[in-house]
Picture 1 (tube, helix red, strand yellow):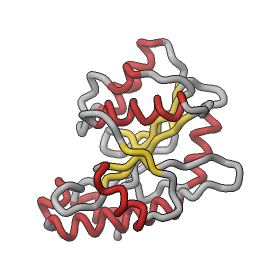
Picture 2 (picture 1 turned 45 degrees about the vertical axis):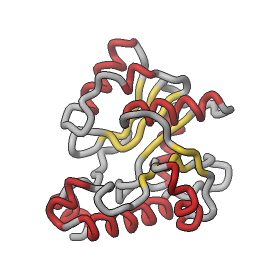
Picture 3 (picture 1 turned 135 degrees about the horizontal axis):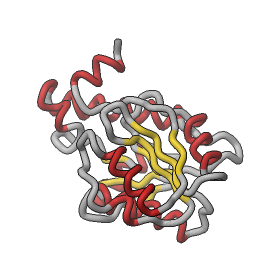
Picture 4 (picture 1 turned 90 degrees about the vertical axis):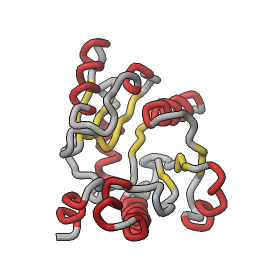
Length: 191
């Protein structure tokens, strides 16, 4: 899932410390890095880019010309993720994994590991150091995983696990990675 790196629309917490222009540039660079690191290995998985905003489709096509694009839909991040998963599963995917592009250490090996976990579990989650998650995947839609979650807080991962346990779903966990949201994250990435 990718937002177009427009100044003032991306990495707003980071922009508060380094300015909107630099934050947008870093967002663009990080997206390009993650896209390179997650290029599907032959036969491993198929990649789709769920993009936002929809009116920037031509910019996305110019920026990432070899990708398959689908516009994000939904009024908040939870609905957007739920709709992306639902779209993939309703259009032929047996398993679907979604992630953002602000995770500097995300690789195609980790994405493949997520799909392998789904061979034996209902859901896979990749926890982030900040208490959120950088990846979620499943074999059938589970809208309850995207409702009543305190997005952008330290409780996202723990609330997701609580919801999974309450629903009686099996799940697997990937290695913990860092995402890029604050100036502290930036220092960790470019050390």
